[in-house]
Image 1 (cartoon, rainbow, N blue to C red):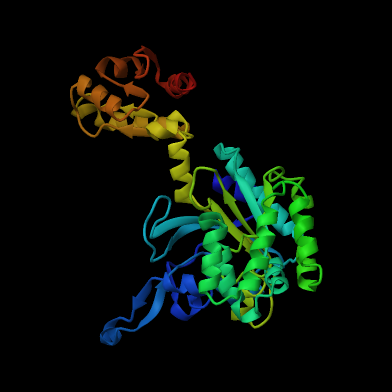
Image 2 (image 1 turned 90 degrees about the horizontal axis):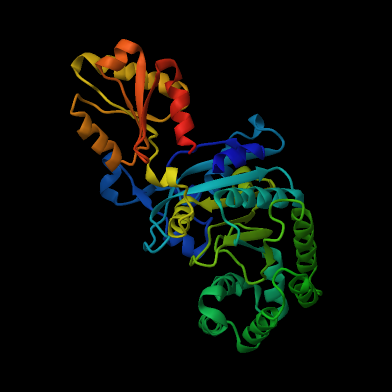
Length: 421
């Protein structure tokens, strides 16, 4: 379903290798991210050095940037791609957090227009809506606004990175926890107080209204980058109003996201019963330039597949058919002479779009039915000697116990009719 939505929004598929050169990845993810890169030691005659030259993918965005730089002359002016592949992080496993997990990325390269952000938010919102989510919140901010906010609060520029790491934990540790972290990271009391006073006041504003944006606009009014960022956020919200993201966006000036390559809008999607987010992303207009030597506008978003599965499983959001088994029909084998005919019947049913398994050996019919029941296969197709003589198939509904014979030519239609019950 994720792939189908991405394709309808014009994103094309891409795959990249599981590993990249180590120097391609290091320095792109900030202080915390660099510690979580799985490094690959040199091989062969260099093994004894204990040095690393490769690393497993940390995300799908940096590999995309390397690809865009490498194939710049073969790509269209506006390049939209989706990528669904595993990534690896040397993290401590927890609920919804894994060392190896799949990301479902979309990225749009080549435009600075806020239409890009609105389109991306619309597509991921449509994915979540189709999967059955209705209570998700899109937290939206801008890295430039954060920088202006810190500047106006009196945090010196060399300490902005440290302050961002602390502020990114606001929703997890609260104001007091962030206060302690800012102090620990060397930010003076006055700047800490001004920063946290802003966020205390922000908490009283309606999250989905314009009050938060107005409060941010007033706080950063003396900073041109901050003013530009607020204008950009306002544009994104207005444009996204005509997409599936309507009603889900919440301006959140505390959102920082840990990755250091973001340059503009940043976004995360969360649901109430998950510690952490279902996914996140943002604009990274400088990242491709690290490989290419010139700025290339880019924006993207990543959904975490395992986190979606965790929440959907806990909420019992999967349809019964998916929760039970992918197999819709089990074809039995009557005796050695009928093995080839059972395989032919399976091929005929598969040709009509059914998901079919074949019991692998002749056995008592009762045992084959018991196996189908244990595997929660809804329909069993039986072809014994009598059925073959009449060119019939007996189909048994394992849910109701009903059984009837149909002509071989009508077997697929009969099974599909029963599956719709």
